[in-house]
Image (cartoon, rainbow, N blue to C red):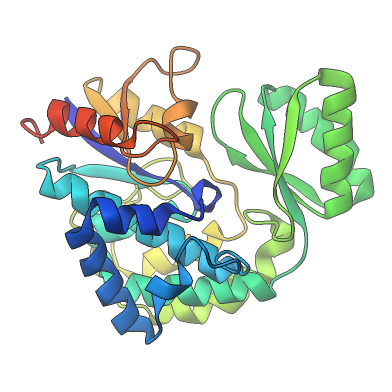
Length: 317
């Protein structure tokens, strides 16, 4: 089997995630948190304590927390002997993917994520909602009708029947009403204020561009699979990465295409969700791609989930 790391996005957060990782993998958590605190000059351990009522009050803290959790999961996997020559990341997880691919060092990524989150906090207002189970064709019709209430786009194409819409709150609410009344499908608000991966959010991309261009990019040592392409990018110069991440802010996440691209290329792929919860793990399965899949975290049986991945993949990594 060929291990493929999948890094989740910010919707996978939960308050206890850093505390639990610190207890479960103290060496890996200490290494990541020490370096991140050194890069930012503030006490991240105190902020990400589960009892902190403001732990996710700002998007900056959501993004940084999930990025750190993903990285700690990766360090633990690698210590257990599971290494991957390919990876990909959903939305925020693309930055973990770039660190894994060698395009950006961890400390620089921490600083960039911190800046990205602060810009998102100041960006245009809107909302995001996940939709399931509805086909892309049906959702496109819903979006076209809901645009009477404001800008709205399909922002994540995650599987054949799971998508996300982003845009003005009134338009998102209108789409949710149509989906509920006419299709009987789930349409759940996943972001109350920030309309990521939609044109309405392009001003945030413009604000982020200087930080992207000033980052210390390197030629990736492993293939880079951007969300905006759904396939490998041919990187001739490191500054191309900054341009792809600029587009990443306001263009759709092509996750379904990305997974199918890898699965078609590597029939022996073993997809491992490397981070909190099991969102990406659950997207896969017999109703879409019946691939080999693992996770390193879950609502129950976290140690069992990680142990299964380590047991099956460490010898062949």
